[in-house]
Amino acid sequence: MISHYPNKEAALLPILHLAQKEQGFISASTEKQVAKILEISPAKVHEVVTFYTMYNRKPVGKYHIQVCANLSCSLLGAGSLIEYLGGKLGIQPGETTEDDRFTLTLVQCLGACEQAPCFMINFDYYGDLDETKIDEILDKLE
Amino acid sequence: MSEKQLSKLFGLENSHQIDVYIEQDGYRAVKKALSELTPETILDLVKAANLRGRGGAGFPAGIKWGFVPKGVDKPKYLCVNADEGEPGTIKDRYLMTNVPHLLLEGIIITCYCVGIHVAYIYIRGEYEMVAQRLEQAIAEAHAQGYLGNNILESGFDLEVYVHRGAGAYICGEETALLESLEGKRGNPRLKPPFPASIGLFQCPTVINNVETLANVPSIILKGAGWFCQQGLPKDGGTRLFGVSGMVQKPGVYELPTGSNLRDLIFQHAGGMKEGKRLKAVIPGGMSSPVLKADEIDIPLDGDSLMEAKSMLGSGAVIVIDEETSMLDVLKIITDFYSHESCGQCTPCRVGNPWIRKIVHRLCQGIGGPDDIDNVRRLADNIMGKTLCPLGDAAAMPILSLTEKFREELITSLNERRQES
Image (tube, rainbow over all chains, first blue to last red):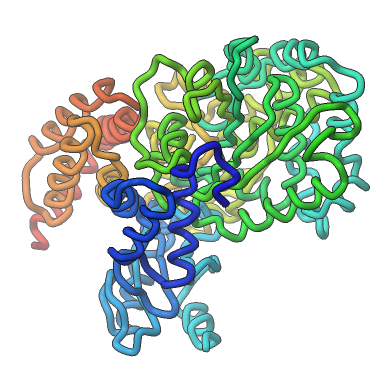
């Protein structure tokens, strides 16, 4: 990974992605470890982790549901689907269910506007959502 | 008559695999470029074709490539902008998913032309599945000798790497993209120096959008004259328009530049959803100024939309119906820019959240018509006063919406005031 770049620091985003894939989130100790590997200051790692929205700074559920709340999705009912999801899971956006299965997050445009309203669960996209489809998708998860 | 170039293989089974792609005449442009054409000839071709950038700014690609200094004792880089964060924009995802090898062809020819040996595809982190597909395509191209050392015995070497972003709209701005690729926060750089002379790792760098590069192979095969005949003479080729919102058939449509916006919505995208009437259209991604229903009889090219005080941007058309409140649309726009400001320039960092606060209050029925003037004043104080175009991108839709829909905004405010 580091070999793709002329200097080590450039591998910071990919390494953080890798760390998050392994651990689910980026902890303070991970930040320090990454800083050591790349020979940069922990502060530099921290400022990057806090800048990008995809790095979780606390653990998330097994299924991280990220719902688009941007324009095309909102035009087609994202608002009421977000309420429905929150009600179904018993959590507010930004929260995780008690059994650590689901985290619900509102995000900006996911680039799947032709399938609005849409969300992603971990890295899988689901589109043309309605309440029935959401029920089906969640039922199929382990 | 124009032909589909970019989307002709969309829908063909396994079009992303190199064997299928080659069966459909794929990699012919790379073969022709590397065996028959010199870098200078290619540059002249792309300049003559006047291939304008498809990412948003519309800058001619050939001129951009020409800015890269010659004889510099430093490596040069190509960064492919696949960040696709402009709300409404979906086209690059279609290209990379369906025809990743078309993008690779464009990359190989561009790098050969400019003398580049390392290219990075900076893709938004959410597109993980697309990134994996690109990596698979790169591995296939390597195995068949289209990437790596001594490509097709030409003596030309090239490596392509996929680099994932991590969720930041600002990284679609070219200098923020460079910062991000270097492992930093995506804070845009002051220009000049321009990336062509001092870019990635302080080296000369070309940054092009995915769709821009995907147009290069057909220019090589069919010539600049042919390209100019597709679409308009000064703004040639076809474009991938992404249509979303209240239409029957949202999706990606490839049409010549200069096609009519009304036709795109009412013919290609099937018109409005049943029982819905058109109120407004955002023609080029969220940052483009909104058009009213009676303003959409307009050619889809950069100059025509600029005349209409909007912009073609990334060709992302968002269709809004009569029942949708423009106050709610304004709220979503201000939420977005307030969230995505990188925080570097004060007018954008402070102005956008301030506007957002006022608009949120208006949505709750709190405030008066003079708050719309306050919003406009604040937006006007962001416009043109920031390092990068995000400031303008935020101000433009806010200014146009509050101007064109002022009466409606006041009516909505009054209704909500009575409700609350």
